[in-house]
Image 1 (cartoon, rainbow, N blue to C red):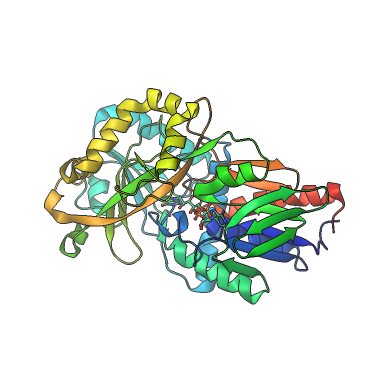
Image 2: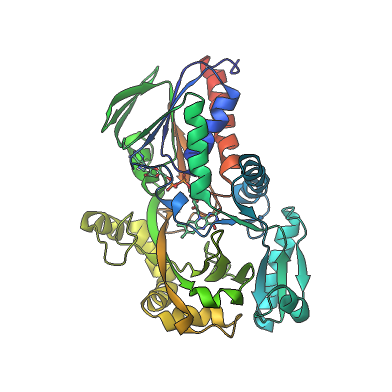
Length: 408
Ligand SMILES: Cc1cc2nc3c(=O)[nH]c(=O)nc-3n(C[C@H](O)[C@H](O)[C@H](O)COP(=O)(O)OP(=O)(O)OC[C@H]3O[C@@H](n4cnc5c(N)ncnc54)[C@H](O)[C@@H]3O)c2cc1C
């Protein structure tokens, strides 16, 4: 039986995925001793605190994929959690706009996918309805998702951490995991704040997912390639141009959604993110370069294959990164009144995107397990939305292992 598991569970990473897992595990096994190890002084310091803040409804993802399932499930749970805890949550709705006829087949495909994935209230609308929802937007047609929402995932992570501390979970901040040795009966972990032992370890390390996996003896493939997502924001006097969320029809060959206009929970309106190679895992600024990390990425055959395949897209993204005018031009296609003079720089985020040795961008959420260590290998967008769903999936997997090992 797993219900009475009273052993020690270690979690690497105090982002929204690690914290949601700790919460889920404790709810199933109240007698367990759970420790979260986070290298930064605060939880949610990386992807969880640097994103668009959109609670996705599950439109884009191939039906049957983990993203499709866990996003729709996660969205409901994020909404409920925000309501229970009095955290900001605004169902402002979203339009995906086709600016010309050539984009209609791709938009219809998104409608089909979203409907199959169970996205509530999703429907196609014409130019007049686009104007009634977003008076400054234009297009030949749009997909309207009325329940797509915005929130502050960093605030959710902090609320979860407070709740976990209150329930007796040890959240060790400033605690970097440096070594992992998996044994027959437990896992030994060396950290900057001392040595620890656990019955099982779950790693949700985001931009360091591949490194932690390798430390635990897991295979090195896939690797994390950091893609910076840069944003601009509308000057306060121009925020009225956007009511909610306005997205383009994305390139179906890429896992990124294209430069969009995003209302934030604090009232700001962002334009972005693009996707450019970051020269450091935590390279939030263009000039942040970590030579060792960069050389390691560039030398890796998986990255070279990826670069051969996507060099054109990469070049376009780089040009856009260097020119405010180009950046804004994309969004101008669907909000024509937007001007380059309307925007000022905003803080960037860095995506942890797994890339396989074959040079493919890993599209779905991915996990692997070696001995007593379970590694989250790919949790890019919409993993913040899906965090409760991902947490359930990891806990289910661990429960199976607890069953078969007889632990607890
Ligand atoms: C630009 C951008 C926009 C996005 N927009 C959205 C969106 O609108 N909606 C959405 O749902 N998702 C979005 N995402 C994705 C979402 O933010 C991530 O999928 C999610 O935050 C992943 O959470 P995580 O806990 O896995 O990773 P993280 O939040 O990165 O947490 C991992 C943690 O592990 C810690 N860590 C790493 N190594 C160690 C170590 N050795 N020892 C101890 N701790 C360690 C790190 O410090 C970090 O805090 C976006 C992401 C980006 C970058």
